[in-house]
Image 1 (cartoon, rainbow, N blue to C red):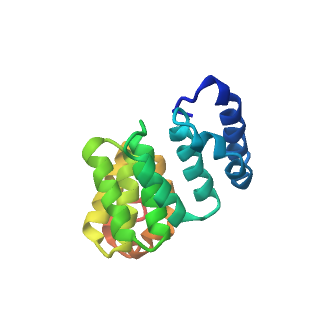
Image 2: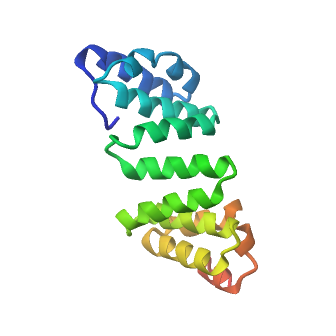
Length: 170
């Protein structure tokens, strides 16, 4: 966890984080109220709430939580990635691409940012730019090449000779 809480709520925050790590977002969500009601722990509560809601596939609610969390959370990359994840899953692919553009303006060397942007652009039918973004990601971190082989979001690129060459199939 990258946020602080008052000492009196630290044990509860650790418990909630543990439930999330165990893949039990419903258990985490059920325990959040004291964090959300405390001025000194609200950021942590919102962070955990967003993670739990994503884990429960409640992406619209998670987006609301991320919006409230954004002004004071210290990890804008996590916020952008999570917001994009939720936007895509609520049918807002263009908004997801905008999140990755924002992330890359701040951190142009984010391989995951380039890869995800490439995925969203492919879904939007922007083939040339999608291939460019996935190529950048693969150049930064070779394991993205393996992910790209089976990534469903990149299915529209599979027939393109440039994409096949990128994957070593050309």
